[in-house]
Image 1 (cartoon, helix red, strand yellow):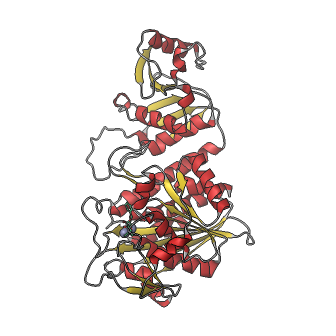
Image 2 (image 1 turned 90 degrees about the horizontal axis):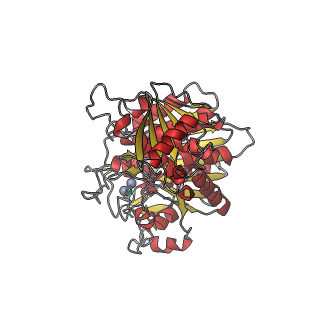
Image 3 (image 1 turned 120 degrees about the vertical axis):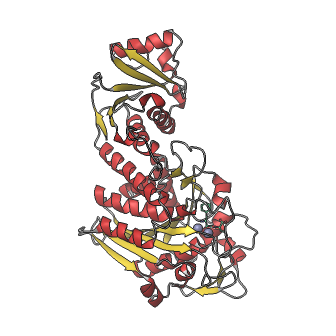
Length: 483
Ligand code: BES
Ligand code: ZN
Ligand code: ZN
């Protein structure tokens, strides 16, 4: 449990975590409590603590425990640095068995408080369902954490959003044979059950056949699992207000199909439904926070598996839009399932804006690494709004060009378009985006490529531990709260 309260109690059962920059060494360190200030100055005078970034120093004051946490140079302290430092402190060995904590920000600002909340919810998250643990191990999520700050209304929403980031992460981290299409359908049904202002359309195989979702069905053809399209239409605003649609890529596993992924690339492919997980988590958040917008939440769910029925390189497939697509590579399946759902929603709902979120290309990792998701858009205002939400939430985005000329590289001799480019992999993220753009007509559109940001495979990244990051949940929630 995490709570913000104005004053600190410093009772003897609690540990006080005090954040401070290198200002700790100066006369003007902003620590108001006299006893605490004395302890800090004692540690500094003894050369035991300087407030450097990454520094942790435990001190005892009477019978009370204090953990000093260094933040480095004051001018370098920002939200990410705060979040990383608090994460490190909360996971430190000394606090392992502590049940209750008070955290004192280094300044009484919303930036500090939000960073601490997110460190305590998002930063300490770990997927341990299948790891045997000792009975008396207290995970950080079980601790009582009090942030000592001036309360603000927005904090309770920040906690909810952070918890729903972790909700998305659980969906991604769980085995692909557990989180399959029917499981996700159940999750979405559970979220919308009993809610008057949201209606759910579920397309099963039969309905998809009737509606000619040839591309999505082709991708799922080698799987023994059902394909699904889930569309939740949420009305948080008046009937006349326009709809914005968000569409998530939901490949519950991406083997690559007959263009099979090699060892080293296939192991994390249960994360290929991270876009859908984000969409579902934002739907949950919109209902919980009663976001006052009209939003269509859609997921394109399939499994790219192999058996004798699997779709094949060289096939030509026609989807909902009527365009024929040559399959250049069965591993470029995300753009296929999205194409059917994008063109369906554009056709049926005519939303004012449509945003897709997808683990679409390995190329985005080459271009932007693992902390920035790629953004491609045909509309500068929409792009700016998304970038502003990215800055406000630290759910980072970087814009790549909208690049219509790339269509020429996806020409096919036997179909209207091909799902791969002839340009030998150059600009792969923009090619993927350009393919999708062919299916949204003139609709204001943005594409979020989260292939680099959705999953931490090895080292910790920023304040994310191993596994799913829940990318997109904070970003899209903020976007809908503000646009
Ligand atoms: N799901 C992958 C993209 C991906 C890569 C996600 C790494 C997460 C981490 C996608 O379906 C894919 O395989 N894309 C291909 C496209 C190519 C064949 C044109 C790729 O990026 O290699
Ligand atoms: Zn693929
Ligand atoms: Zn994929």
